[in-house]
Image (cartoon, rainbow, N blue to C red; front, side):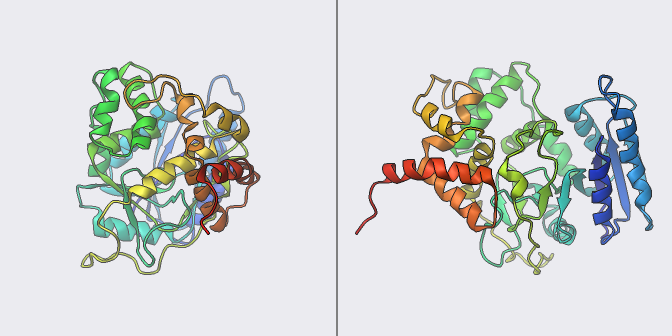
Length: 367
């Protein structure tokens, strides 16, 4: 491994230690550490944050370690964006891992190969090891190309990070649906991100990863995604900053290995040039389904639609009902995830709720 690694830490020493043990196979030569400080109202944070940093002492291979540690707590959003600005100001490219993103070892050679092949392409904004559909894309391809990436185990060139950060989100909140639709043709993606853009324009703060993906979409850049999921998120649950739904089937997505034939500088046949719009659509449906706590209630509520603005639903609450307004498509997606090895009571509860509705609406099978 020759590519620098950006490592994001906070107050989860066991997660940090496990991740660093996993790095031993590839022995990254340079690690840039972004760490947030302890929260004032959480006295246990002082020790836990220090223990997370102490995990770096496990690194016993030749490695240049540069730390950017905040003395006070900045919060997830400000700490990560300011830290990534700092890190991408020092290196031209990097692989980025948070302490709860635990990759298959093949993520590193795959990401390095993608950076070699596509890193200088101004149309590529990020390279993503997390595949929300577990397996997807053309058989034998080294990647698939889509509009919306995922920031759980990803890589980018410094130029792509800074260019995306400069995308201006200012404007008229009421114009957000039309502005987003001009860049993203899928109505489902527009309905999800238009309220986010409108809220940002109205002065409401937003999670850093959602904001970055929104800028990425508006920039017109593409994401390259591994055809097999290469990253397990082990931070979903009660200790998470936002993903606190402990039953979330995202925590159960299997991790596989990247295809052995990686992209090369002189080969353009290693992956598709066209965008996979279906992947973007289904990945967002999977995201919405994974956050549903009560599928039976969601099915009932999905029959009602509140008035919205343009193409945008009236509220974020309404957005999460979208999968239940298209039960046949959602059912097929869940069956795909189950076939890919997702074992989750949450997934089974969603299947149980959607199966009779999807069957009724689709009508009897043809003779």
